[in-house]
Image 1 (cartoon, one colour):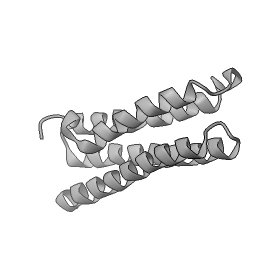
Image 2: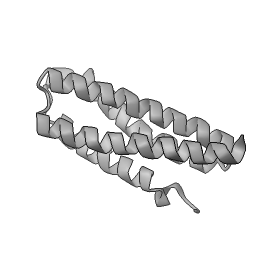
Image 3: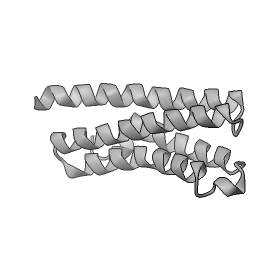
Image 4: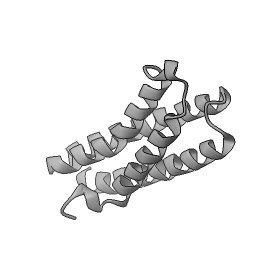
Length: 120
């Protein structure tokens, strides 16, 4: 693989960012510096950390950044639940975004485990 753009997990996380931005546009304006900003930063952090780690060229650094992406995905998982519970997103929106995020978490975990087998 020559670039992070070839990674399916990066592609899926980019798609999730787009979906999340569209959903959060409908959030109350007073949340622009609250949950809206936090969710957007967590979502953007996922493909950004994948790209950062991949660009460094060493498996140990890649693993470190993949763990950071995994942490951001876990953070987003919690934020999605909060937004569903306070009715900022519908059950359908929650299901769609949570499903995307869960798939990304599984893919990141698998990629981390695969890369760890090369390093350790």
